[in-house]
Image (cartoon, rainbow, N blue to C red; front, side, top):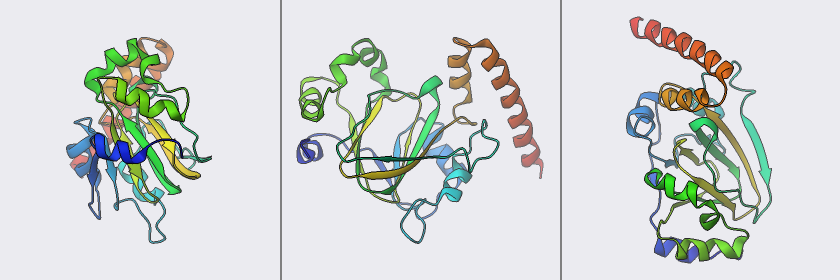
Length: 218
């Protein structure tokens, strides 16, 4: 691996880690979701065999746009040293990623600097692995980092630029989602691009809030 992990460990701040054994939806929403805080859950979504428990995950990170939440979860395999582009999720949707095998480095930038990054994306987007340490060192805005192990889940709000680098071959589950924590940010973004999708989303939001109101009465 050509990227200097020790330098990142010693020089930059780690993302928030949550060691809770169990995480319920209300806890996640109040502590991280509504507040837009990226976080790595080390234990809460891990099954007995050490791999992600998708049923537990989808009970917390339900997506209002998914009718069949099981089949809407993407599984991806990537090779060691592959890395993603620096980006944000489409239309400000949130994203969770749970690692089934391998090891992955995440770089997540504070959302307060979105304008600077979006206006100068080439300054922050590395062209190759050797470029990653150099660009982080040269730029005034530094990312938070996390090294994700099997069974761990990372949540990234739609407002944060982020990228990942595979330290080993990896298998992951992931999903973009919209629900009560981010629907307003998503609807504002969609309205700018596609009015028909916006109208569909408005109906979905209304229906989901009716369900939430009914559940509160039970």
